[in-house]
Image (cartoon, rainbow, N blue to C red):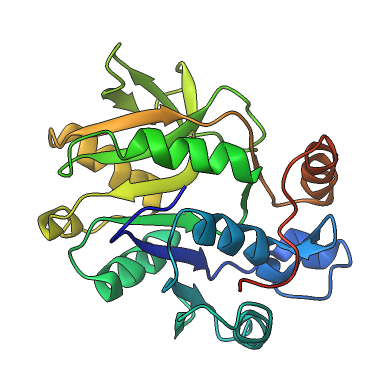
Amino acid sequence: MTVARLGGGIIAAGDGTRLRQAGYGVPKALVPVAGVPLIGWVLRNFVAVGITAPVIIVNEQSRACVAWVRESFPALDADFIVKTTPSSLESFLAVRRRLGGERCLISTVDSWCRPHDFAHFVERALRHPPEATVLAATSFVADEKPLWLTADPSGRVLELGGPSGTLVTAGMYLLPDRPDTMAPPPLGALREFLGWLVRQGYPVYAERIDMVVDVDRPEDVALAERLAADGSDHPGRTGS
């Protein structure tokens, strides 16, 4: 599957404190799943849907990610933002601003999924009108702090952030080609921004993705590796 004119961004500015404490001596984006860093899985997924010029934000202690991507994905025209941010929302907005007002897909680096599941999500998400924001959502809850949502039969999100719901968000967002959605009031977290979009009446939809693991702990790495071993494309080490 190749998608024309779709921008892409990766949020990889988190500290990965729990993984470091568990003995992983690399930035979170470089923590391996089945021998391949998390950022390698995301980039391979991007390449499969035609995203070849991603914007990637990393913190100032994660400069090794820049070198790894340049070496491992030489065919990509990756644009890096090296900045330590106070929140996932600030990282998200920095990537969105760099991408401009075009329709784009932004993923957190620790949202691990199988390549074919990612491709199916993007294919379905792109069926929505270009002014819609589309959230990847799953019933496979592998997240310590799940962000629940409730949607109507068309997939439009009616409520986001409550104590329960029908699905949880999965760290991947197809954003519309209208930049006015990127001017929220002061908020503290990305999930607060997504909830604000819903409350303001913007068209926000959920599209299912089968399995996504939010990789924050060693047990999350182990779960992702079990899923990878079930049989799916392996991202290898090059993006060419």
